[in-house]
Amino acid sequence: MLRTLGAPPRRLLGRRRNKKVEGAEVESVPTSRATIVRAQPFDSEGKADAWLDATASDSDDAVAAAARELNFVLRSHRAALGDPYARDIRADHALVVRLGHGEGEEVADGRFTRAVELSREPPKRKRGEALAPQERLAAVLGGRDSLLVGEELLLRARLDLDVGRPREAALQARIALEALLGELDEKFAAPLRPLRDRVARAANAALDGDLSAEDAAAVEDAVSQMAVAARRSSATAATD
Image (cartoon, rainbow, N blue to C red):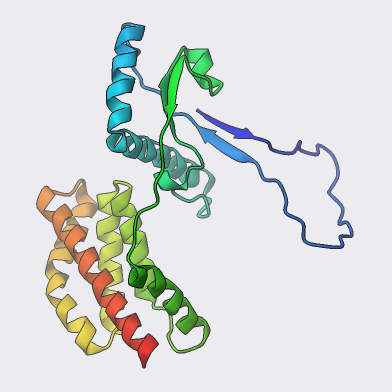
């Protein structure tokens, strides 16, 4: 169930006119609430409480499953509207993540009989890892480095893997690999050439249906190796 909160009322007639402003003030923005509900109800409130206690103590799997379900909704919305800008999300994009149970109408309105708000801790990164993206951005904006087509394609493959779309990831990985082989210097491209056969086999299998565990693992490994090669190439460019 999806609901938008705090959205300004729509104007039914006419167009909104431009207005004069004296400064760039912060605008209030609407937020969206997504509620993922189990298809099967609990037999009793006691069982619901037991589920909540057990799941809240180790919530990673439940939150990841909810994010996959929400991304499926967003993917369906994207395809139905033909809108490529309707993007996928990660669980840590949420302002708040709650886990709870309640009656149907209660939950639909964002209320619970009992719920917990899950703690959110940002992933810890080493200082070098935190600074590297900033250094890369400065290098690109300063003209010392350039963006590769293969990098963007590779990010799409990574996204498809993360949200559980291995078929799409296999097809993206094949195109990303060919792009990077053409764009990277030979010393970075050479280690990627042995990946060609495995990635091509997985992409061909993706055209026919679901991937085998072997092909899915090959795509995951190839995407990881391509990411390493791309990072090493950009790090070299930034220091030249």
